[in-house]
Length: 212
Image (cartoon, rainbow, N blue to C red; front, side, top):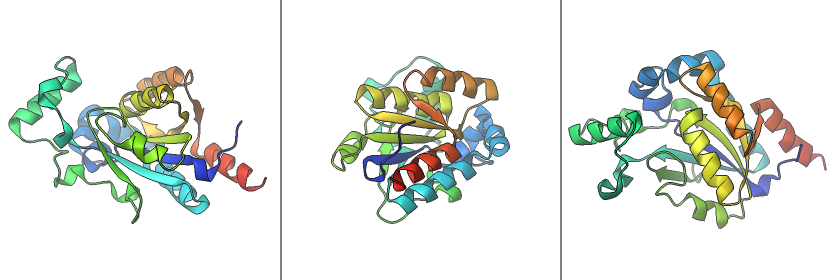
């Protein structure tokens, strides 16, 4: 397995906002994420990766859903997910609206001063965001992905990233979906584009490079 060079690697912490990952979050409860996050210690694994990345000097980037980036003139209207977004936009009750509790990062996944916070919309981290520019100007070539949900933001971001030329590692136990089956199916697909490793294995890749 290829080691990870800290100065060329970024950990993307994806959509770890209260509405999506907190046990009381509206989306976390409605989509079934809360149960899997709790059972799989997903946020603990995310926090460990963040700590390790900071220790070795790798970039930590916090990606958040920002509904204000929605382009109403060019918004998808099909599928359950986009129908729900449209309904929330019309009602003005989005749990991810800027300033809402649900839009804040979970307490276990808080950015430190100086760490980039990137807004995106709707799904993948590169959608309507400046993420590629942030990574490119820092010379980043390898990405570690962690966050929720596996079959949505993680899968979409992996596909976008590899199309842009990044090498991707998905931290399987630092991601969660609505069910174990959904999570496993997504990871099986992503293995075509990325290395699927545990948080512990990723820590080992950082340390392997340190020992060279």
